[in-house]
Image (cartoon, rainbow over all chains, first blue to last red):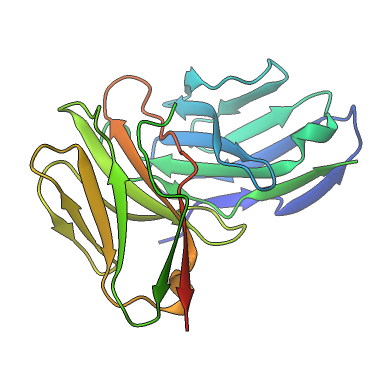
Amino acid sequence: EAGVTQSPTHLIKTRGQQVTLRCSPISGHTSVYWYQQALGLGLQFLLWYDEGEERNRGNFPPRFSGRQFPNYSSELNVNALELEDSALYLCASSFRRRPYGYTFGSGTRLTVV
Amino acid sequence: DAKTTQPTSMDCAEGRAANLPCNHSTISGNEYVYWYRQIHSQGPQYIIHGLKNNETNEMASLIITEDRKSSTLILPHATLRDTAVYYCIVRSLQGAQKLVFGQGTRLTINP
């Protein structure tokens, strides 16, 4: 069984640019979660999508947005990149409302210069 | 906000059992206890979860006190590859569904 896949693995962007990160959940998982982990810091919840709808949002500005497609894959978009957006962006998937844990992908390392 | 309290760091000798404590004194009746670990710069890895009974899988054992206000994750025979940050999380299946990560315990396995 394929795990959660994220792309790209690394990328470098310039301040002010826009970026799109992608996530493919485990087959059958309907929920996708996005987290940000800045260097040396903890995981901060960004967004939760389930069945194509945004279900919950963390304390991030509106320039962080995303969507979930009918096949349950998801994109995270970040507009007007700032230096402090440099972080590891992690995607996780799960069955909704089941007591199973999330399965995380390996993340996308974003560097803003 | 994280609802759990964990020691910042712990050390354990290779081959010994590593016992990682977690306090979750405000846990609700419908909240599960989850444990994850994160090896440097990788995505967190699910270890185990439980509601009120003790649980065991191929990776670890989870001991939850009878009042459910604390738990202990046990790695029975720690190896160097178990060096990681371990997160204890409580989560309800209602409402926001998100896992809220605290700072975790940095476990170092020494040879």
